[in-house]
Image (cartoon, rainbow, N blue to C red; front, side, top):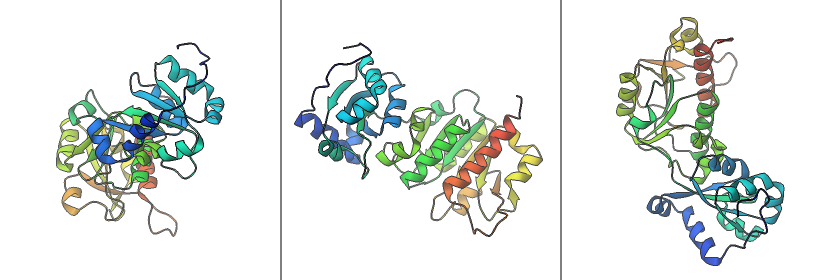
Amino acid sequence: MTSSTPGPIAPASAAELRSARRLSARKQRRERAEFLVEGPQAAREALAVPGLVSALFATSEAAARHADLIAAADAAGVRLRAVDDQQLALLADTVHPQGIVAVARSIGTDLVTALAGDPRLVVICAQIRDPGNAGTVIRCADAFGADAVIMTEGSVELTSPKVARASVGSIFHLPIATGVPVADAIAACRDRGLAVYAADGSADRRTDQLAADGALARPTAWLFGNEAWGLPPADAALADARVAVPIRGSAESLNLATAAAVCLYASTTAQHPTGR
């Protein structure tokens, strides 16, 4: 069926539900090279990538509310299946799911492919393990025009349902390399002419100083460390400089995602002045 107004959606079989539910396990995601994408916005962004989504489960209420999404999936030849609220809850990762879960093939690429072309803004996530933080940093990278994201060894799995959800679909918008040693990521960025700055709240240099002296106008890679312990000294030493976000008030520090947003905003503003 390829019309813009799909007919009734066939109910999901017990076997289809079991198969999809197994993707909640990391081992199954790896073996099958598939993962679950929860929520209408993330599913919509996944559908925009040809051939990425193979199946979409929706409650009747969600199908009616997001008729355009259902029509797009149908036109793309995606297998549509109706589920009730209880069945959807078995697939969803959230307490209050939004009625739609898609099955997509795994994403992620190698370092060479991610840095192809002439990247000007790259994000390196060094052992970021919280899926919410990882997804939000990827969303920030997407919003501020980064060309690629590199997730190093020891980072959270890119196809974790929480990463996909926290990114609100941004994981489908830009190349993301996974499983890369920190030293290799930094060396590859430097080989492509990018300056590498390590975000470090205790550093003497600040983002506003780099912006003022023009350093952020050049191609840049930002290195962000783990939520709990930051960047190990050996990794921070590989960067061209350690850089802090200026804090004017009484807050002790910023969380990872907020600091990443400030750093990336500083870079994109420097690289794309008003009117250019």
